[in-house]
Figure 1 (cartoon, rainbow, N blue to C red):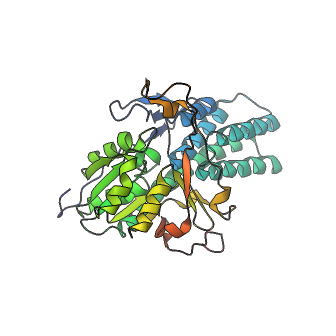
Figure 2 (cartoon, rainbow, N blue to C red):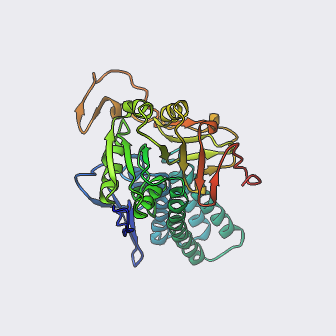
Figure 3 (cartoon, rainbow, N blue to C red):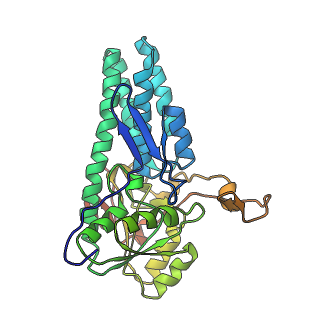
Length: 357
């Protein structure tokens, strides 16, 4: 990016929904990136669950919206003509989708909206067409809202980025993970378009290398000066004075500001705190979980041993070595300099209860 002119940002979003008869939902297979840009069809709830669990689609906002569209597909094509049975079927689909990833709260928040919609359908004795139309409308609203939120996150987050800043980021928080231009990466994209001349250090993000495969790909496409580091280099890079700020996303933020994000975030936050480097979280308000008082109650997804024992079909350890593979960790709110949502820039002590926001 030049320092004099803003650029138009071109992004590849992680999914695409085409309304029609029938509607069509596809997702970018994020396991194939950066070398192959491949779209795969999602024809219903079970295929969506498989894609979410396999990380073909990932990122807390994108997971929620793909799940919403998958629910729409199933209900629109269902031949069920009994209202009670259709409501029961929709409810089962909601719970099935909700079980696909336990840590990211955006999915749970979205599915709760569908639960309320189904309950209204039942209590008000609405016609079946109303349920189908309402589910489709809600899925579209979730996608449109997230796209707008991403623009706001980019604008607010970029306010925290000075000209010429050197920024460390972890995992992937770009357009691939949302319905818009991203969360934390939205702020970096916006700073780049503003001609701030930033440089970004992206961690590889073991064990599945979302930073190496996805973040560097998105940043380079946006014309942003990018360097890739291994996760184990982060503390050294922070200690060396090379980093002016850290900016990451979130999968769940609870009432006191404790934040769950991709495994490895906590270590970066601790090092940033020790070396006096500002640590920012950028996430939509759909990531807030008012029900939990602290991060101790956040469920942490544990994934398969094979993700750690090897990569890309190549074993890197004995095949029988025991593995502990938590997919997320929790950064205490007091290590976070500020949390950016579309509602503003929040600083501690955090109070994300409904009254506090």
